Length: 280
Image 1 (cartoon, one colour):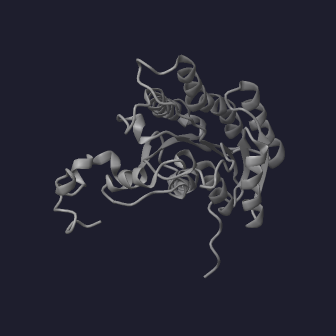
Image 2: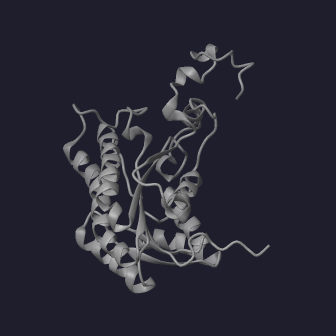
Image 3: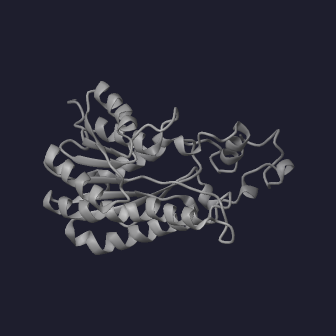
């Protein structure tokens, strides 16, 4: 049997938020690494060239092709330059992984207005701007796939009071649907990944007890990582998903389909048998 051809051989990808921002691998870094493993040439976009360089080192050590673009995807000029750089360096653009995001706590009553504006700019506006310039380049390249990172908190209330974050992620889902409808005939597929409460750079500061509470409240009873999101992204980027567009794919150990009460033992307030006999 001949060796399997890389699934994304000949493709060019842009990954935003691709840098290494902590000791825990984030979704941008993991996705960039997997895209490169599957043969894509990857432009590593990040505000920090130093952080993007850490991801570049991993890819190059594995024999992949990538380069760094330092820019701010909340700025139109930087998003234009990002797309132009990918096309100039690699000859086209086929994949965009819209990944940047941040969060501040607060309800509508007490969230700081500047925090609300910053979250909407980073989590939602940046995806619109990156896509605005990527779509024409993808059309010139024969079509493409855009993958937006939302959250399960975009279609339900989250574990904590982060109204701006959750609203922005709901906006990402709506943006995904509209882009998929409006640009499908342009050869562009647009899909969304909704991660659950996985452990990554975004949550590196959580206590062990908080982490355990999160994974124990899922049907699978396991903790996810950025690599789980990255594998989903590779699928949505490739030809295996050629007939899929406009979806929101939860990568969440089933947390979006079950209440915590339905997966915790009775002696912890749930409905399963007591912890001694529960399957955890």
